[in-house]
Amino acid sequence: MEQPPRTPTLSRLFPPPREEAWSAEQAVERFAFGEPHRPASEHPHAPDPVTAPDPVTAPDPVAAPDPVAASDRVAASDRVARPRVALNMVSTVDGHATISGRSGPLGNEADHALFHALRAAVDGVLVGAGTARTERYGRMIRSGERRRRRVQRGLAAEPLACIVSSTLQLDPERIPLLAEPEARVAIVTPSDGTIADGGAAQVEYVRCARAGRLDLAGAVAALGERFGVRTLLCEGGPHLNGQLLVEGLIDELFLSLAPTLAGGDGAGEALGIVAGAAPARPAQMELAGVLEGGGQLFLHYRLREDDSLARP
Ligand SMILES: NC(=O)c1ccc[n+]([C@@H]2O[C@H](COP(=O)([O-])OP(=O)(O)OC[C@H]3O[C@@H](n4cnc5c(N)ncnc54)[C@H](OP(=O)(O)O)[C@@H]3O)[C@@H](O)[C@H]2O)c1
Image (cartoon, rainbow, N blue to C red; front, side):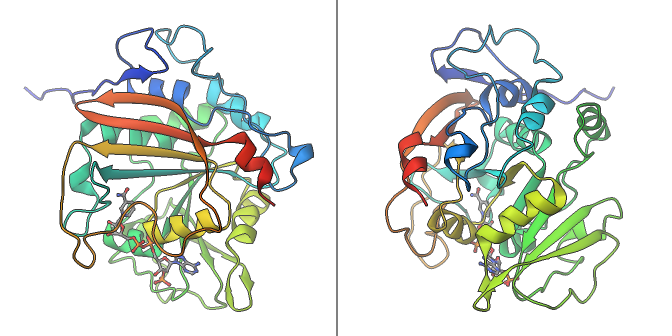
């Protein structure tokens, strides 16, 4: 007889736990996209706060997640100047973002469950073309049930898939997402070109250039203005993350820490979760929560309010 799929559970370590185990969906409801950090009136570039419960003061998390909580949060951020941006990355404990060039070996079941639950909670997913090609990006939300639940919450059935590329070498053979007729894809590019074979996906272009290079801040704002994206989950890769960091566009970080020592510092094997030029000064984050599932640690950080206030 066919066994039902196992559902990994997650325990909260910080703030101090008040219950034993959450599903990934419950964790995202209680854990993600939470902290108001600056009124939009004071900061024209910062997103308006989203009104999720603070994990510290939230009601008993054992209770089933409120099915409308996420959509309420999103509705509350209707007035954002740009989407709220969160990175979601996985790393070994010694800081490697890949093993043999892929991130897949770093995640366990709980990591995969959280990865998909985070996707299910946002308006858009941002990814560099390098990652989309290497990881052979497919459909954003494969589960029909999960797509249906999003629609019930007033979200689009799937998040807008936003691929950043300048060469536009985006081929449905390498990126199966582009072959999905129901996929909505925004290609973020400084180029005037189009991709050679758009496949079956519904492709639009966000063209934002400054001095011939991508204007990443302008592009992120355009995703909000044109497509109504209020919450944007960036899934890497490290070079795209590095540019978001330099531009002061990272509001939150979900870091999944694998109990693995990869070692080695050879070319391509030393990629951390953020790569490229350093920002003028490091972004100061604060710890918002820690979960554990199957030996994997899940760290949630937010940009500190004083850091956010200091940015232009
Ligand atoms: N551990 C994790 O959580 C994690 C997550 C994601 C990825 N990864 C790993 O990271 C590796 C890929 O990361 P990566 O940092 O090399 O690549 P990446 O950031 O995913 O993609 C780089 C590519 O994105 C496009 N791009 C990025 N910034 C751009 C800009 N400002 N203007 C125009 N285009 C821009 C360019 O695409 P074009 O070449 O098309 O112009 C560029 O070559 C893979 O090995 C993947 O497995 C790990």
